[in-house]
Image (cartoon, rainbow, N blue to C red):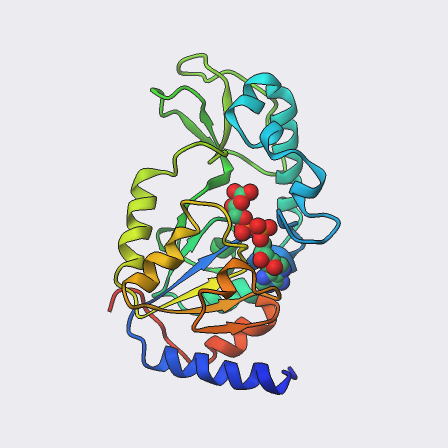
Length: 256
Ligand code: APR
């Protein structure tokens, strides 16, 4: 793989930071799965989801209550896209660091498919492979087969509608997962930020939280975006190309 000289120099600097780091974690967004063929949300590409669909209509409680069939159909379409793809070299590079915790905004399970242990992945925005009851006081949930997703249906336990177990705009993040992610980011030597526009809070706030607690930040993204401004080293490139070169030969861990 041929890097441009400036990227190669920055890659060396980033590897120097990792060599001096005992506690490392990764924080990822849709860009991590882009090379697998899943669309991102805000990229300036034609298939970015929010350039074609209205997030409030499709990823909010009000959108779901206004037209639940439309929302379930859209997520089942995303599930069919997901069922057709495989992990890419970036997922595999991260899976090559089995002691490193993965904090991800992604609802796909491509990190797990690449070999990351499920208990090493914090899905801050939930999982597209699960449905849950929409009622706040019912914790019924089901695993979904992305090849055979189900139409709109009632919760078998309480009768309220079932919906994808993802976090919609305006909803709280899963509390235990969110607390663990914050605690991790308060005790890191280095946070790898991979493929996120870092524009959706509170998740995006993890980068500043890590920096406030003396963590270094390495950003991997073709576009610097908001994360690039917070980076000790910004590696301009696709995750599937940069991550294997960045992580090669390391055995990184989150808890030292
Ligand atoms: N490698 C690395 N980064 C990439 C690649 C790639 N091959 N392709 C695109 N990117 C970058 C883009 O430059 C952009 O910075 O991935 C980022 C994708 O940003 P978004 O589309 O905003 O996705 P994300 O940051 O995950 O969005 C956060 O917003 O809509 C909500 O819940 C949704 O979890 C999502 C959250």
